[in-house]
Image (cartoon, rainbow, N blue to C red; front, side, top):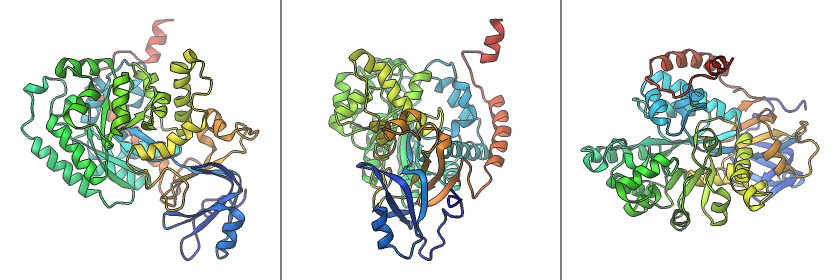
Length: 473
């Protein structure tokens, strides 16, 4: 394994190209043994049998990667980058913690804290094999460029949401039609233009929940995003309380209401969509909307699990999201299959629940499509961005392989990721960035997080596990 060093994974060729020859490549058509790739100018320029690529590119010295699989990087279809300082505050808490924890926490962030929190979250995501994250929009009182700068500096691809709320989501919508809806839409247009030509930052619009925006804003953000080829991220049908609020205000469930106001379409990225009726599943399928299936969030604080296998059968576009819970792509894929098995497979006798490959595909290609980047990333194919992982499958968990896609889903580990590439550049080497000081960032984040949490008016329902343990002894 002497060849596999950070220096060897940086091109010394005049045209900046790399010829990587692992044991296998995970392509859109499945695992291909003895395949190789050529990476140049941030993209895959060739993918095919290693012998052929070596003949066609004699000026490139093959980088042989025995014991490794080259696979597309994971796409986190739903993240909150500026919530990393309080990630552990969610443990054991009931649903709708955004009111008691996330809004107060983000409100206490200044510009430095936003940058450090977002970069910390980006580092965790890279360590877990994510090459793209969809940031659902911060409510911190700073310019979103602080989040963009953090993602850019970390070297991760980011779909950057701008929150376009123009209503107090906790009050009567009819009585709270915001007078600055025009300003909100103007900001949305400016955001889409501001990041429309960047390599790593891709603009998106966001509405926290449907009741946090007027019908006009929901309708027009949908139009603006569709025209820009972007997505609108909205939390929908996640908790019983949210569904009930929508029924009281509009006489419709959240997805039904979005359909009524003209905001349901291919530009919608519906986060969670766990509490969906057969009618709403049909609306999703007919409209072309995409879903972020967030299984860990369902387990930690949800009221239900999204019927992802049923969505796949109906042709509904969906990817996998962490919701900021933990940045670990292999554990997310495992949770996606596991949640389907427990919630639906046990009662129907479905012992495969997607046959393993489904969750790898939705964690990469499906996620890229859901966040609006399907033409750019999520797959190892000629012309696609070179966002990929080198995974050591000689580890004990996967060395005795009979069905590697299944094994990666159920037994793959973050510590098997030798290297993470985004846009053709080495961004992470064995868990740490080779071009900037990761441990120093973690130390600064620990300092700032302590200060922020102490001054934020966070309200938790449960005491810490230490206090609960002490009370029981």
